[in-house]
Length: 388
Ligand SMILES: *Cc1c(COP(=O)(O)O)cnc(C)c1O
Image (cartoon, rainbow, N blue to C red; front, side, top):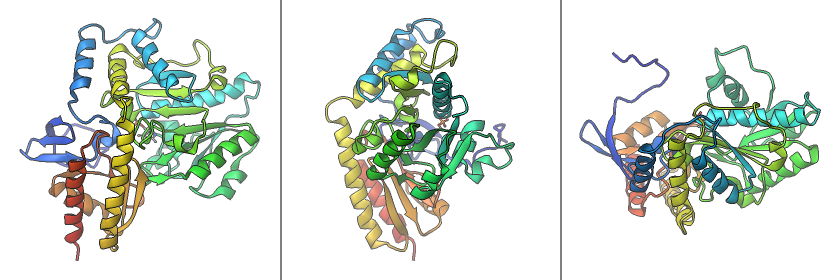
């Protein structure tokens, strides 16, 4: 019997190795992995370049404290700022830590401006910002918060798409609005570009900060390095994690100068955050992702995948209700039972993962090949056919 605390509804299947978009199971079968560790394995499994980079670093230096200068960390931070809106980066180890740090930085900014009561963060109901005690109450889903009271104060909420309740929820005490640019766990719900622009304007008008949680949709997943880029806006704070380490746990928060001004030595820290081994993974992922054409290809493959999925949808309108997403962050909103559908895909050697609103997420590695997408499409159509 398993000695692992029972917090996951685990499938029996386990894997012995991976290569590219494929995972090899202990049952001898080979699976097409369109779960990718939930948008983590951005370069697929056992990527040669990542392996070399980590191997090389592992022979030199794994860990030193952040009380010392870490050149590999300086390098990744420099690249993240050169490529994005950000002026500074703070490294963590996971998405939840990054979103929590984002909340801290927002509060601290207003504190440093002599407005310590301006400390509330406005979030979307049933979103997902991680599983730590503050993050679950920021996310505000029943599933994540039930039994974990007392409720952590400091968060207000509005419903996805409800512009009126959003404006009404902003008070003198609001420090920031924090939303996922594309809601992942919440069901692959894309915030339209006009709404992102509107959010930026609203934050400017109310003199509050805009935090865009790109832990899932960021780092190339949307076809751009950040999902908000198409809206041509600049957020103030952006937590990232999942894809940046390509499978090595890394979290980071990107901030602009303004937000950075609120922080000083001693105000935040992390023992493991940004250690040399982690940074070798992060830097390698950046090397690949900023090669010419890489992100364009993600976008192109995403468009192709979504177009073909919509074709399947129109053939099976009583099974697939809606195809959602952007880039290679794709959700199939189903009429039929989600767990059943995922099991049938698995029985046909395609790995996927659930999201809220009866959605099946398709999250292939970002370097997935077109013939692998075609294979997945075949399997999805085959599974649709099994329903009468
Ligand atoms: C996964 C996720 C998190 C939490 O990341 P962990 O690494 O699991 O702590 C936070 N925000 C979003 C949008 C996520 O998808």
